[in-house]
Image (cartoon, rainbow, N blue to C red; front, side):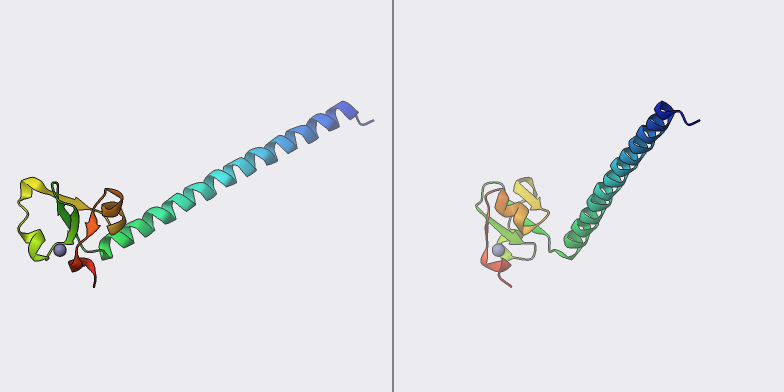
Length: 98
Ligand SMILES: [Zn+2]
């Protein structure tokens, strides 16, 4: 004789397990997404030229720009990307056009 209450309880447990597994899968997918985006950001940084500006200036330059070379290290700031520089309120110098 099958106990109906036991069967219902078993199904409830299985359902809970499936929900837990789904939660874990979603966590793993989210982690994977973060890892991929981190790896992509490293690739971008490696290929990008070093960008610098003076803390008192309004323009951002590539490192070998004549203007950039005159910036004394005390006033120099570096950016991880062009977007980073623009977000901080700097405009691109003509040296960044190429
Ligand atoms: Zn420049």
